[in-house]
Each structure stands twice: as C-alpha cells, then as structure tokens.
Length: 172
Image 1 (cartoon, rainbow, N blue to C red):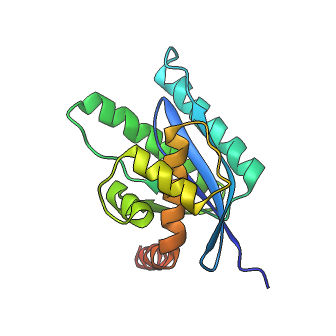
Image 2: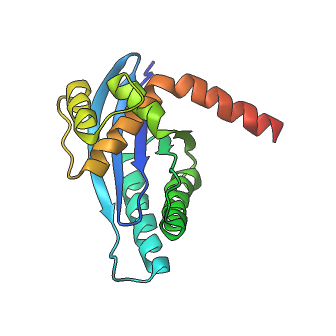
C-alpha cells in the first residue's frame, strides 16, 4: 500500500506566483518540482489573472498533486495592491479546487514556524531551511522557495488541516 501524498504549495502573487510540489510519506519529504508562474505587468488585470490560471493548470496537469496548500495574504497600507493580491490568491485557490484537490490555507507565520521553527524570519532563513529539508530542491525564485515552504508546512499539518476542512464541509 502506497501512503505517498503529493502536495502542491502555492505562494500567491499577481506578478510572480510561486509553486512547489513535494511528496510526503510518513515523516519523509521528497522534492518533485518548483517554479514560478509569471504574469505580464503590461497587460490588463483580467489577462494577467488568466496567465496565472493557465500556468497553474499546466503545473497541476504536469505534476498531478493530490492536495494543495495556499498561503494567506496579509493586508498592507495600499488597498489597491491588497485587492489585486487577493484576486491572484483567488486564482491560486480556484485552480486546484477546480482540479478536485483539497485546498488548505496557512498564515505566513505558521509556514515560517513549520519550516524554520519560529513564526518570524526572513527569506534567507526560509531558503536555507528548505534546502536542508529538501536537499535536491531547485527553484527559480524566492516565490518558488516560499511555495515549497508552504508545501512542507502542509505536509506537517495535513491531518489537522484535512480534519478542519472536512468538519467545515459537513457543517456547511
């Protein structure tokens, strides 16, 4: 019986959306792939969202994840930027859900705590720990490294995340 679960982490962004795929079996993790879906900032918002959508569909088709995890966004002082990031996050949640995947959500500090041991840290610390946890990992951007961290977080918490999702679905 194979208990391997393929997990896709997604770091939402309108310009660069990081993605990372890992396999989790028990307590061991294995790097599968990572990258960045980019949108053209000279294009209209709807076209950029379509680029992100199509890019994530391609990743899911190519790598066949079983579950997905998306990082929650934070609100910043620029309401317009926050709204656009929220729209990109909607794409990050819609595409895997449309593919039939369970989609979990994690706060940025929960991802950091799962990967570096504390809820606050910088990108260099995350990249260092992703490299230690997934020594064969290669990625093309900080966003892809963050996406791998999100996938690692989900691998550590997936039992409790799935329980929350199932409970919410039963109540809803």
